[in-house]
Image 1 (tube, rainbow, N blue to C red):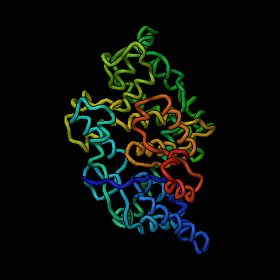
Image 2: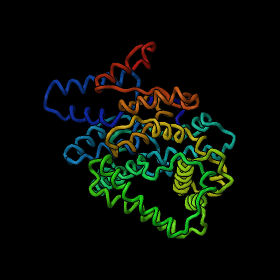
Image 3: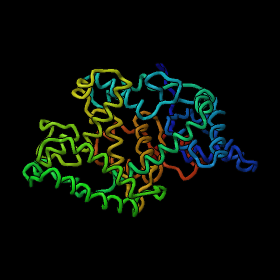
Image 4: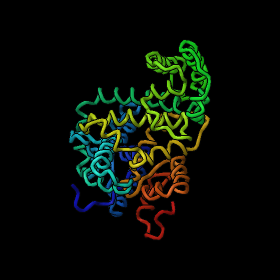
Length: 384
């Protein structure tokens, strides 16, 4: 546990990559720029806060020499803060570890609001160490981890494309209206589901990440999973089929609950199951006691995911942006890209709870701007 916490600064991976590139350069001007940044950063009192997703973005670069260059930079840092592994493993923690700390706090304090959950979770969430200690496990498993990062990157591209596509056109439909709707035989419903496969494939081809090799296959595999679960459902009512497939009870459905709401609830339930492998708590009690609206990461993640400005193409890196946005509840200063910064701005205006959780969030065109921002007088902080 940290008794006196330093000022944690979570930088965007792109800025860290540029610092690493300049530090490895033979150009004196670039070397000087990196040295000036490091000196200014240290003088600002900041300690770099890192999580698994920083390493994933930095070390998954297609050029292995660039990835090694970045690892060497991180390795050179004398002091860094890291999200701790919930299970006390010798690895930097991911957003899942961050969420595990939150769920544990929410479970132990059933009346705690999001700010109280944040404050309790933060007591055990951080680890101060050297860059060399953080990087060591990655170097020891370099090839396997880089292969894993690549596979994870491909999966993120698919997840973002599928989640952003409204291929079914039912996101805003209320469950209560579906319950009153047309009853279809299971075979007819399965046929209708497969009919949506073409729409999703077309969406992925047109707007999905260009790195998705086979949009048709991505869509087909998604629907094969849906159909495999759908085939085991007993009810004939479309709405009840959706609820049964997602493991959601009628008692959890209100008059305005939409299909999208049920999807979000089901996603959170699956996440709780995954997190409970770390927590080791009675799962029914976790589900009953821990609601996503009590978790700082849930509030921030969902707001940024929803409000992230849309683009013509859906880049798979957005998923990592959403995950790393959760650091804003814990870092004193969090740097994000321009579109994520805009999502934070809108979210603060829309929700007092969000505004109370998200600390100082900034954007910077270059890492040299960061040094100036962190060194600015208090009256200028937050102006970025």
